[in-house]
Length: 468
Image (cartoon, rainbow, N blue to C red):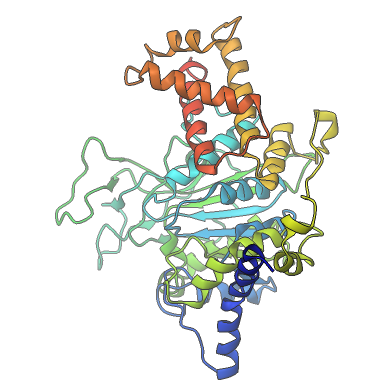
């Protein structure tokens, strides 16, 4: 046995360390302590154990995702995914799982804390913009984003507290996606150091709960005497929004709810205020289409999990294993294949390459773009993602800028006046790299490089194609 085989066997044994730890807890009779914010197993004031218990009482199974979001794909859209108070950025894999889950008809709840997920939502915003017929309207700035800062409301808060703990009493909807279902039976919502949804985003336009006109998002949260500044969001701001991707022909379309305060669901706020409880359960009912058989999956891999906890090691070691085990037909063989070395002893398992739209099985409500993105995520072929985005960029330039013949030099002549910070040498070098990758879609590139090229092409599109 060579060193490669020995290394692979050692890695296989290391993956079972978390299982051993958890088994030890059971045999010894110890109970793990869950103290991190928004954990469904945390029974302290900052946990979600009461919310989990109420959901269980409806007959719905509740699970925590602690290693890999890819397990969501096993539900085929028949589940509710909850992302509560994320402190880590979404990886590309997580973003594409959310996108695929929505396209498959699943429900998603995103409750952000101070807008920490904004950087992660940029890719999801782009993907969802491709799904909507005709793209996003010109007056809409993205699909979903949060304002950041702390919401203060001078006209609606608990007099015994302070304006940083606002009480929401204005429930109205512009788009009417939920037809009043989410706020049914809800008279007021108590918040705790919340932020707001960008009112110019699509979810902001689909707002269902609003602060008063005398509110703003204070960015200097330590200021003892805060007041609104010109650059801070102010006025009546949405703190919850909803959108339904279903239609008359597809009643089971995906649904998304965004809430700008995850503390609304914790044991303290949820336990003390009945209307918070009613609103929280209305969300689960609406996202699951009132189907009690749908499981509710809480994503805890994006929380601040302590490094010395069993969940941390579980996610660290078994995250990749669970990602591979989510692939159909492969998961029963994964432990054996890992031990003997799949690359050395077996041929590489690949899906047949899709040559045209007619070769793709387009499920109801799906598009060619969404099917390809799901396919490439499963393959992990980031070079093909770059090629697809590059082709889309060139088509947009020909249509919007009337470029009869595409060239890097001609593109530089167009964009240099749009963004004076660009440097010709760096710009042309990056374009050359994109064309090199597009010419060889089988090239192996890293996810980080694909992300850099994605934002580079997105900048070109926003300057030359999306502008009117």
